[in-house]
Length: 413
Image (cartoon, rainbow, N blue to C red):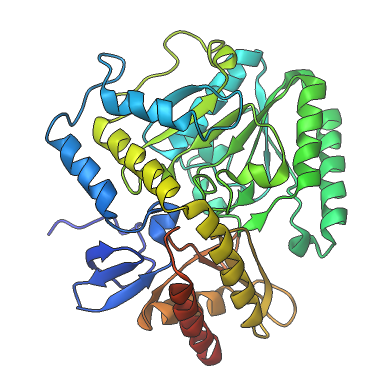
């Protein structure tokens, strides 16, 4: 009998029959409140009628038009619509399929444009599972173990994770920037460094937000040394944090952003955005791919952007994010050391009495929540952070429903 790989561990026991809005309906007949959103992908909820109709209409006219062979209207329309939401100056786009591909494209462009070999990533970041992006990922060894040698030229600097260090945010930020300067002196000289690659909020690393002083410090050093600032918006983009892009909380200008996940409401589509001047510094033939910019995915992405605008989902994510974060903090019990997040990215970190990570209790809470009808995921280096990632369409009532279940879980776990 043919089966899926045994390495694909399933986070919940649910087999899905259909999805609608914030809910998944299992083949067991139960309804589940989905606060995983496909790991932040179904930004407009499951099967939003406008997205469904756009995809259905496109399937009937053109499914695939390889975009270095022919142009097609959905992609051209998407390029035009993204122009209204992208950061100023980022007016050139390259499309791919997955987040890993987008990060690799940003890496390739950074090295080719600067002629420099090295990149600096930040401790706790997640950027993908390919050889290059797994090398750049430090949110857990499970993403890079067992297939060394990894790619050269990657150096890791601290991220201002105040809870992990046991410091104030100001102390953690000062330390992170001081250590970054020490890396320039000891590991990769500024004139050998092509780019910083950083998430506005650590995703797989435990839902740790950055801050303005840290990102301003990165921008200042990037400008001083001619380094490119690449901001990985794969999980934080398209309204997830309560602003259209996560870096906008920190008033920082990126040179390149990577996008994916919430862009197309579940259809595979990713990309990078940069200035046309910077993009033109890539080498001929360095960008391409069979499926990138797929017509159906692009049509779904256009519809997604329309829904985000029409239903004011960025503002909803901001308001519901405050409600969710405040509610999770209010319900925190002994054994939850920290509750943090930004917008609709909220994590509760489980710790033992001695302050060590309590993976067992986090896992038990996540599994018990699923039994009670609330789907959640874990993350963090020790997998001891339970994260809540509802769709951007989530209502105040659905947030309260989720928090009620979470309270019951914490009472029992």
